[in-house]
Length: 160
Picture 1: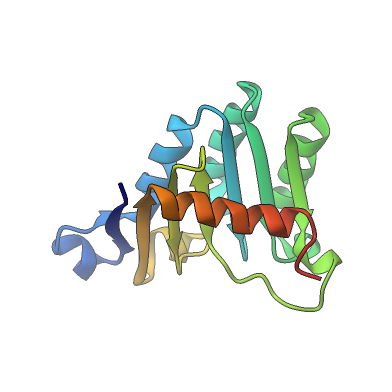
Picture 2: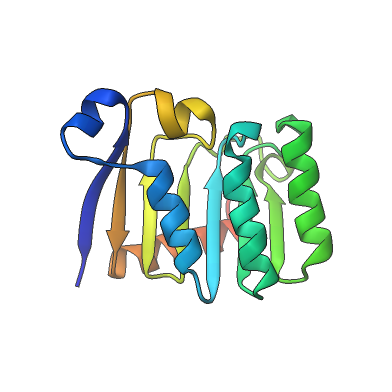
């Protein structure tokens, strides 16, 4: 069965009872038992706590795929963290989208165990997680599986 919930950031959205994007992302990452897939345009140091959670998942043996738009343009601390994670855990794959194409990866997605996904406009930054007005969806069921398959195609380089 498919379940969809609207998420957001911004004071007016929160007043209307919409759950925040960042706490939901944290929640689903902590629930992961097999796999986490992340697509990100940008990570900033203000979202470092999310990467720390992903590292904790990697320590538990959870397979991690992180595809970022342009690894070289990411904050130095973020780039180092991603590279160290990949170096220390054979089941962590960090992919630089810009390395294989001139196109941009603008998606912001977290998929956990191919069963639940957060999809939205929010970057992994202070603005995206807290201060901007962003809208996203928490999706459970078959659509999450299909999103995971799209991420698989990017991981395999099918976007070139």
